[in-house]
Image: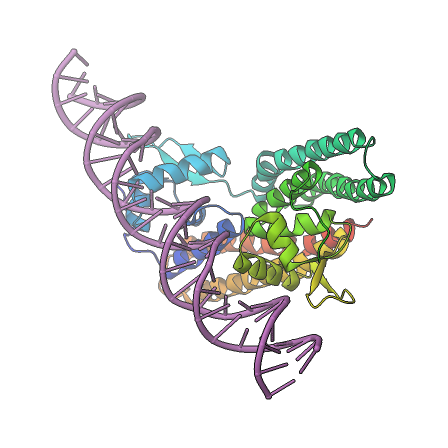
Length: 166
Length: 166
DNA sequence: CAAAGATTTCAAAAAATATTGAAATTAATG
DNA sequence: CATTAATTTCAATATTTTTTGAAATCTTTG
């Protein structure tokens, strides 16, 4: 039996709003932010049922949202002796959270961007026969600039990961 | 009269795809990425009509997309003597592009986050009467952690803006 | 200043995304 | 091992976002 009150306190509401904004900036569903915010400010681990009742969201959203948060390692399963339900608590180390997010969500994008630029370069090399050489040089300059952006972005990631240390 | 070919070359298609992915990561509409990509790789400024014909998008999307890009200062209006239409070219300095984006799109979010945390702090102070002091201290620790995240993010922005220099 | 051209606006349609809840599955208990 | 509880899945629904194109507005030019 869960002893948590059914209504959200003003404090809880504010904290949840904070994270909902965050997840929306990151392009994640609102319910994911709600669940994370609720768990972040919860003094004890909550079951899926607690989450459903406090946030008034559906079973499906809760299950799907927790799956997302688990896959981001933003939430951890905690065993509560005597309860048959899984209980969840938030990962509160933002350093860890950011590092995981960068590694799982950002780095793959950057790598695919890098390989795409490589492909465009080869395309340009193949076009040497036929096309106007001056135009091709101009294109190459533009693609090179893109390559430098991509490279800089890849350097940036570990810098960011390293910077959030507290 | 526009002399640009009507079909997109493979090179153009690849570059556009690159930027479409980018805008989708940033949460901007696909057409915005398409327009920017087309302009980025275009050897000469293009009119809205050129954009519509080459990308096969609607008038409304082109107008709205160009508005977005202008407001991000990712695109510049260029006057072409003898033509009545506005012509557009892409801002190709990624340093400028990133700096503008951080200032206009990211910083405001961070500032509103900061002030929201301030509000939660005051809420907690007001709650000193009535609530369990131990629980309130626990809450305060969680809110402080949030505050440190917010502070770190704000330090990060100028660092990133500074790092993309080429 | 009329006429044609270019651009913007905005309501409606289409597409993409998120949410719901009932049914299926999986796990725990007596 | 049957029963009940907990969780996941997924098709249907709702919501949000993007795109379209016709009408309105603004601009240029003869």
